Image (cartoon, rainbow over all chains, first blue to last red; front, side):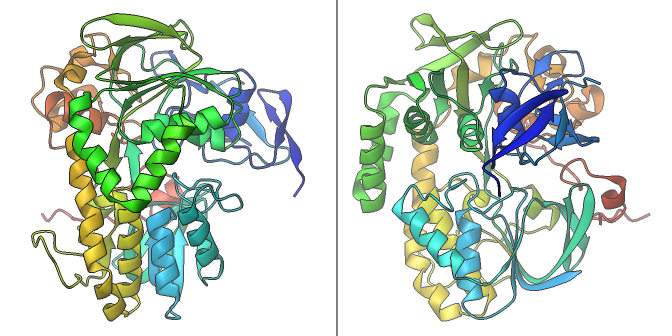
Length: 84
Length: 422
């Protein structure tokens, strides 16, 4: 496995170390929120272990994926905060 | 459908210990976990770089054990009487078993206070998990708050990764921690761990009887207000790592009508193990710590593979290690002031943005849920359920399968545990 890989977060090219979770990659970019709540508040990861669903993002077209449990894969496309 | 003699849900220490012991007898063992790798929360990412003697030993043992690891698969319920239903990448997976061991661990207890929904307010274990999975924390200022021994372990870990830990705020008063200190001092392994943690957190203030009252910031956390009951002060920080102890992940056992343990706890000195087709072990039955999880996992693995005599030998150790659960619960009991942190506008159910004021007049969880949607979002009350139990004393928090959001393909295969007649 390559040491570094390239993913895209909200159409931005990001290089991360292999083994980096999608949640960690998003936060490392300086972006703190992963989604908007039903009343429009910014929310970011809370539990880090697949319980709270605050970190859900769209990964490769699949909505509601948990960023904290998804490992970055080469070429992965991630959309946060319901961005299009 | 894959069929296993012994199927283990959860690949943390308890699940790993169960897999090691069960596989020694040559039976077919499967371990399923929603994470990408073995280790659970406490040993996350330690497979190649173990951080303690115990994790080193158990990763060595598990390397030579023969079993299927079904990774990245979340169990959501039962598919039939002899099989569980899981989901991986939106696809249903059915896993059959003769014996089932539930080692589903625990989650953190999160309590609502003003600002707790701001990005960068996280669980203590939550921030640790994110850093272990690649979040850079070097140079960041972190306040660690809440309750329990986990806070110190998290502070030590974050410091080792270059974070500036401003302080550890433990809500329990100093006098309460005496029995915990005594229990730790009496146990050689726990004593060694505690001394190591003390050295690793040198220079970080440990404030007992101190708790957070408000997280401040606009789009994200900027500072935190803390109190010791007499005065209140503010600390500027990048992250708040805050957990008020642990909550057993007992939902799956509830679906299966199980919750049977390896020993009968109505007997203070059990001499023989309880044999059952489905057993729960480790943190999922009550927070007892690592040693307890390991020995219960071992016993369950031995029993499920017919090694009853070996299981029996471990019972006294299990009884002793389980006692630690009582000590933990007593020492880190949550203070009543924490019930009054939320204001009427504070969100309690984060999935549905249900405020404290909308809930306070209900007398139980079921009616609050029906009227306000509290607990009906994707987390299925795994956050607000424990919080409202603490805040309002609601004891009727329950959920039905599936355990979380699933695809339609998976939903079609979920078996309801108690079909209604008529």
